[in-house]
Length: 217
Image (cartoon, rainbow, N blue to C red; front, side, top):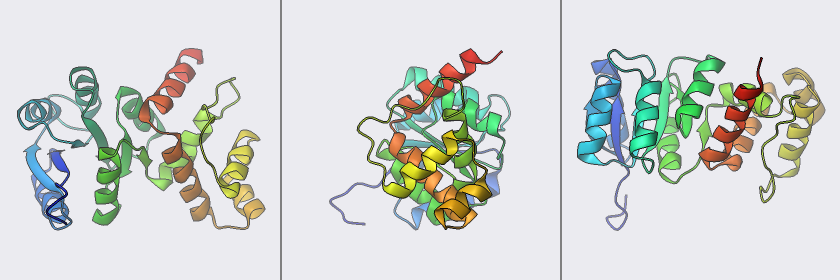
């Protein structure tokens, strides 16, 4: 990394010390500076106060204070700090809770460290980054037939992305969308993730999800 560009500064919050240490080494090798590590949400909040990082990489299931609660606290107290959730949970409700709490990204732990590093840099730049495996359920949630849809004015979707969004609104299944677009299901998920990234900033996605929650019975 060029000396003219300071590295992204990160706090790692995870209650598994071996995983935390391994990830810290992997990120350091890719030019990302881990300025503090925390074993739970409360420690993460304190570490952010002390080190003022660009991004907090936050696990969800931790003792003392959960990752969701810590994210909510940081969003309220330090709104300029970006929180990227890194978790084993592919549960849609966990994803929704994290985004509504203020997370600007949600990545699964089984992803390569290169993808985690890329998501951290995206978070530092104010972008939304969701693992492709989870992007389609969230995109369906945003386009569900409740009169709620993301504001797309000024969002530059390419033709395949626009067609995919239309198919989601029509309720097409993943396999049907793949067949219609002549791509693989994995490429469908990647397109969904690309659309979510373009819908940023995070406040736009959060607002839609909050509206959806309010309209649920």
